Length: 639
Image (cartoon, rainbow, N blue to C red; front, side, top):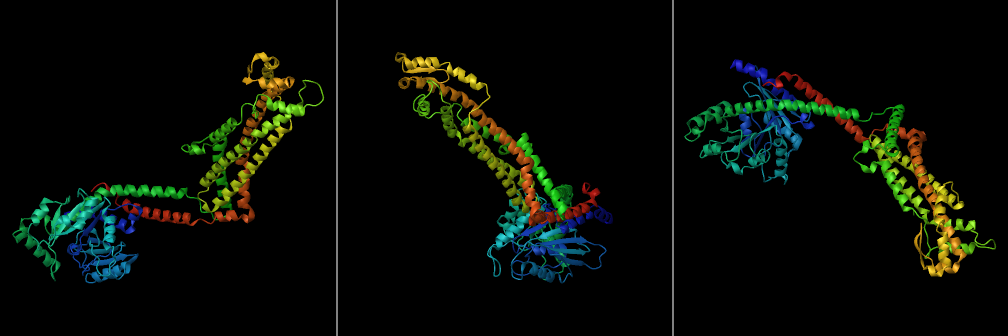
């Protein structure tokens, strides 16, 4: 026995202590569950009596719910202890107590946490018991399940208790100790229903059957038939009665299961508090041995993630120089992103977001704009050449016959340009609206660590875009006015096209002069046209044909300038915005006006400050937890 005890202390006890220290550090708040024995049962099932028998100490008793907060019982066997050492830990306090004063101390702590009425709370109390002869166990006792609130309890007392129980028994690392009274049918117990919701196979549920002496009939069948899937088995016990000492209660229990005509038939390996304590110790040891390697990995992974996240957080700025450097980093990163998106066509940063493939989207808008402009010189007349004839009639004066006045060409050209004058302006507004969205989105992304600056940065960027938008509208107005001011092109395609169209003039003149030629004529470049309405105009119609061919030939040059000129202007303007205008506006806004913008950068937002503090506390806790496990690293994988 001495050798076994020594082996246990050397191999198992350090693991139990490590888990208890992790629990004391509250590593579970980091989402890392610890192997835990959780005691559940319906009200009056005898939970408190079972725990008292295992620990050898008295717990609060009374009518209704005795356990109103989770009670973590840490039992530690100390063979050398002359006197038991007991203390309570709750809400940062440590209260030393004695065996006789434990019920009062627990009640006082419970009142402090959950109030002096009969309400409950999920804030735990830890009871540490160091004494000779107790098993090395850590258990969590939860409030007994009741459906009917008594005076002083909230109406939703069942829901509150259920929520606490489910919180504790859901983790797969939890061993459920389900306390059942022998006096009831097991399938009707609410605690069974709850445990089955999270442990359908029962592989982590152990049942302890209390009050065996009160309902011995049929108990053997209950624990052997196992109608409720208790995977870890049953243990039957006798509750302490009246003023019996714990030693007397154990003697009576042994006598009961040995001599009772019905209870003596139950296998001796599943009866008695001593057997229950032994079984719980074995289950707890196996559970810890199974879970510790995974716990160590989770702690290490969470620590590394938190360290990485903290390192990625923005530097806490304390000086103007720090703020200037941070601002320059934001602008530098934003400019590089915008160069890729708006100038170079590199979309890797937003590969899955086609709306941010900026050069492609701007090109789409330019293509739509080019297609919107009529590829052939637009007309408004109801009959072929009647618009030109109308202009010629107004422009003709005394002069040489069959001479085409230059003012006629310019007059009708201005009409054509007015018909398309709105398209370039609409294109400009559409492009700059899209560019503004891209710029703002990139700036918000790059400045996300400084939310206090984002409104100023985006407003400044929008001012820069507005400036470029107005410049583009002025450019549109200028090119339209230039086209309407004079007619000129060095494009040799003009003469070539005009000459090709004029090849049909002779055939056209014949059709005008000879009424027998019919009313319809096929002309290269014009298709099939009606000519009967032109015969009364004679030579005027021939001049109108010449005017139309010149307009058609010249329109190609106009169209080229409107399309190509706008494309080059937009590309150049976007480059100016990205390389200079945006940065100037933002810098003037934040560094000007007494550097108020930079001062705001040093005012860390509550959200960022809270996150930084949360990560620091988490890292400290996880490092301490890692140190705890490092002390038993040679035992984690060997149990």
